[in-house]
Image (cartoon, rainbow, N blue to C red; front, side, top):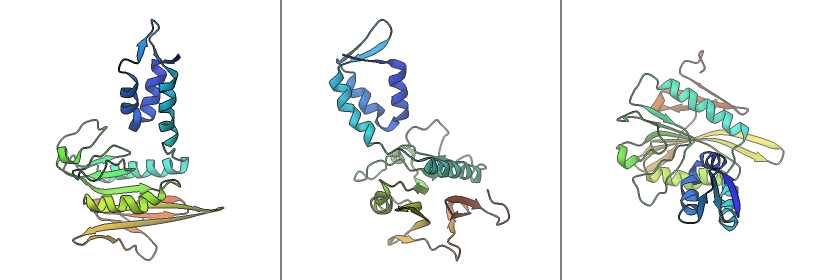
Length: 225
């Protein structure tokens, strides 16, 4: 028998939120009991079977989180005057195309949102609107998915603008670049940068630059955000 304090268990669930519902549901039905100290008691084999899911979750680096936090703050600032615009970060997003599984983009900017609420999931079909801009920061183990698989999937679900903050590590060097694709009648087409490699983010009417691992966003060149 293996005993896990309830508080600790729910902390794990909240940390690994994308797996918490499945994992808890798999353990609860008739396979556990609460002791008088309100501990969750489960058979050790059940815990062992669930542990591989924890190891399969990509753990973001501090650099990834720093860039994501900056983008989340600056995107919210850019749309702060529009009550119907929503900026989400790492939030589950089921699509209205059955062939495409839900995503959790690092940043999603969504217009024409009918109501404000605390979002754990943004269902495109139910809400009647979809992200106008998605930004993804690559991670070493999932970089190929961001550049290939998700590019095809975001095209299928008609995301107007998909931007990648690409961090590519080669031995002892790190290469940074901004990549963008905009939706056309023929599908995605590369978003051309300016001479300095900056990208124009049309949905939020701002420029985005990446230099030496640092992101900068601005509307006026003399006023970076």
